[in-house]
Length: 588
Image 1 (cartoon, helix red, strand yellow):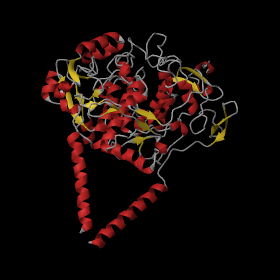
Image 2 (image 1 turned 45 degrees about the vertical axis):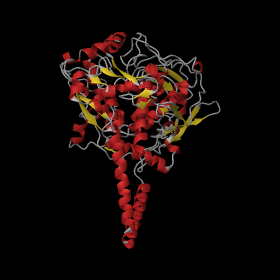
Image 3 (image 1 turned 30 degrees about the horizontal axis):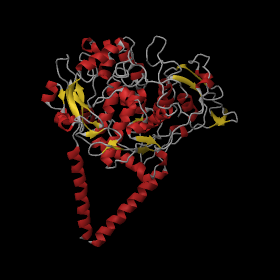
Image 4 (image 1 turned 60 degrees about the horizontal axis):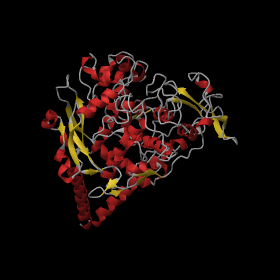
């Protein structure tokens, strides 16, 4: 009987904790009311103005000023959406956030949140006067219980409701009002990454006259936008785990650390043949916002990248509806694949952090995907050709088939991770981007605050990418200018940064056609050469005395697949549960 009472007490405690979290859950979703949407006002509690925390401000004129300073080709695509047959509605990203709310809270000092009731990232205390600092560590260095905590936190975010609402329907004209839908915290994270890339498919690019519209990729704010995203993820995990000291770990893929892909944590790759397979184990949750990934051609290729028919853009461009996706009878399970690519190595990172400028305009004066070699942002994102063997060099934009660094990791995991709008469905996304942010921080720390290269551009870039633009679709509002600073200003640091060992002047230009990729040798994280297969085997890259890499034959590394360790773990767990059950029966 004593054991039964103990179980009842534990159950009551669990219920209490759940209720405590549920009662705390009011954030952006609080503005999802007919009155707020009709008046386009989101200023809960009058932004706590009486406490000196913020003011309710009409940001319409600011949004128009930002639009006037931006790349007008991009602005025209956004503004013209209601007149395009394949779209036919306003684009809620245009003049952000005024298509949804014109009057919003602008917080002062260290205050933050939809009503300025929270502390900004890196601050705590009743009046947000205490500086905080958490440490982000390599996932591979965490204990088993710490790794399980990360996985459990992601699962909790998948079911946590009450914090976020998203746009699921847009009206034909600006005089209409959008439809907002409350979603779980994790599905919100998937949604916003989908939302920024709605126009990025091949079909939509053709419809838009060859213009790539993307509010977080292929442009200047790429690392800054994702830094903001990670702060939101980290704070959400701190909340559900009840641990304000939690730091979002990073996946150190350049060291060939594959501990993330474990059946106890984020699942392995399927052992079955074929490219597109459900992950064999691990997180078993339904995916959302992934029509861009699910749509395949007759050859089982992802249509998103190659289908040029503008008709496809209608589906790709429409706002995602996470609740409908979850109700779908389709088997929308997370998938990974077996693309023939590689995990980047430390030398590629060295080439990236040697870049002398944050970003650089192309020959047409545009800050777009094809930035010249001097751009750190382009090298980091993976658009610059980088050779990491004895033919060390950095060059112009690579073809989409042979991408580098950040992009290559997405391709290596493949599946949902290979398509930007669906990528966040894989929780490894956040650990991957935590490492990308670590590289950004390593580059920033090369310079003292007084001589760090400035964020570019101030104006003339893609709307949302300019220095003082509101980054879409973050709410509360934030600009690259505010976010472009070292991590400790945002309340976190990394346990280990990457020290620069190469100077940009020591890296020659690639003096050959980058499409002839066979001439560009790359040493992967697991010491393979990406070129020159010998009898079906890749060559291995070995560090020579000249700090270059030489090659010899080796078998390619196989991705993690389900193994005997999982069976032993399950057997041990069953034995433990059986012993616990028998103990309760005997005591009663």
